[in-house]
Length: 312
Image (cartoon, rainbow, N blue to C red; front, side):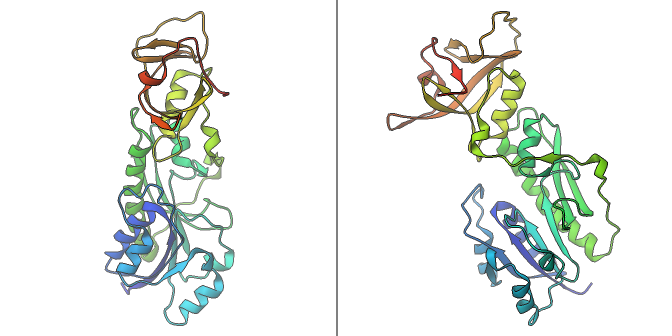
């Protein structure tokens, strides 16, 4: 196989691990990287793709320079065979994604056509899914709708938090990138997405992590897991203070509360909170109060007359 020239546009640890995997590929030559100032969001002690590219003497371009004009300029010196997007934050025009001779491809953190859109990994945990994955697909006018060239499933265990699933997803990204590129270059027939199976995810904001203790206990637990480190966290209010709940578990013993007050604190030795259909044990928190950070639930939840609420 003749060596193919590839450009990566991406951010975060996802793009770094994909870059490192592709760099080892004997039939692919990375000729450029488009990225921006990374916010250091969950790099897991990995270097940003910009640093990795510079160490490998590969040209780095600003994210806003991913235009047809820039690709034309690059192609005057070196033919561009393929462009892949990894955690890319910007919309690209048809003139850009159709420019490379083999097209442009994106890696999406779900098993497409399920969970198209934003924050699919988080939504999968919130929804209590038992699996998710990564998909390498062709970029088309409508986001996340292109033909699938590679896909890998990963498990979501009942005790997995966001960081646990994220680590699995990142490994899957590297795997589907390699498999997907091989499929494209060997002209393997892709899989068409079934529109009847498509589901969608709305974009999440930090304020969407507000908990409602009138919800089912398992749902609250899923929310806490899904929004935990490295994400902003699920939160509620106690005595006017915002409390980010970082770790929790569902109390296995079933207590039949026919007198139910959501957010009621049952115990203060182990912090048990009453939810609809069960009891949540709060194990780790983060509260900024009086200039200090409190992480111990027993240290903070001392007044049983107060409730965990959705308002300050």
